[in-house]
Length: 364
Length: 239
Image (tube, rainbow over all chains, first blue to last red; front, side, top):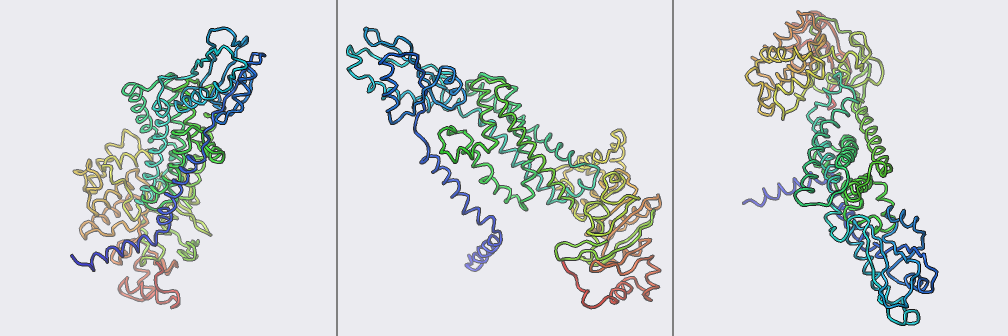
């Protein structure tokens, strides 16, 4: 073994990478960026449970319960009408609704049951709500209004899912979208880069092929793979690992393909800024990872600190996840997901424009 | 027309006419602007000033792309696809009727001597075979005008000769060919020539006319004599 040869090799590698500023910066910046996002999510996350109370009782008992829960540290309480509360929980603005029935009295000996409505598709949130309530409730019922010590019970009602729901039921729908988004982006940008490196893009540009045809052809080609991937993934999730599933399966493919159109064109667009396949891979921590962390795949958007929540609402994957989860977990129809559909169509359109303008520059 | 890339002047006020049905050679050392000129002619690049007219259309113009066959310097095909798949792809891009395509692919691969390799992926091809595959792709749609950027570079003498035979046949059949080269011996085979150096046009004319103009017996001497007429400051490549 020659020290000189080893050193020559090592020096050559250092020299080569020293010129590749972008790789260097990214090696240092990307991990810091990702870890700060994680830290922000964990440290900055709100552990508060937001609870709406629908109070249809004028008795002092009800007033006492409301006052007691409002004072509780672990709960954020809003008073709402039944209709408002129903709307808010469907929109995920609140975690749970506690309904206080009329004629709430603690004078008899029969136990009183209070209904808690939970969104239910996020098991972590569900158990946090029930824990917080079970802790706070007994403290609110002081001896003065409950002399007989009538037991208060909670009756959890789940809008979707329920106690049989686990984390996986919550994750699985978003994984379908995420993987389609990720792979299609990676494959498109690499294969478009190859067209440029091997020079075939020049042959395409001087052929009768129009820019619209290039964009459409690429989209169609990769849509085949995205569709194949989501079919395999959906079937596996439903039949092999028994994910709970309520919505229309065609809607899952609809949203996946919509996301894919954006992803293909994002790949074409961003591949302009890469000269090597290595540089394409470097887009992953910038474009893919933040979306993976913030789009609500693992942590619900409502648990993110404010600024990150705003960032999450700029990311297309957030809307894809909401839509896919809406379809699979809540059984939503397309009419309930017009916002998500609109954002995804807008994202796809924007990326098509960017990709097409990139191709225009190609002719220069 | 002129074209620059940043501070590098690739073409400096070039003006020339290329006759139809002939082999027109672009001769000059590397860095002389041949490829820039060829890319402008093919519509892959626009000049900064001036215009390029091809078959009476100002380039780039998508309406006449189907009449142009373009062979880039590198093979510029899909190495993971077979020759047949590459030819099918370009045939479809150029709207070669599906009924004719199969027959044309067989004919053209026979002509370039690759009939037995039709179904092998291009990445298994040698350099010379790739050049032939690339030529086949440029010829497939039977274009009126063929623009070939150093088509014979890296070819052995036997192959080079067969390429030039094929070029002559095409010109005899009424096609126009623009061929760039830096090999003087190939210049002899052209009907008309343009000598390029440092983005400037040194001279145009038939090989005989250029020899007469320079007063030399040999085309290479003629090129050097004509190049020597340039001010010293402008000589020397810039790539």
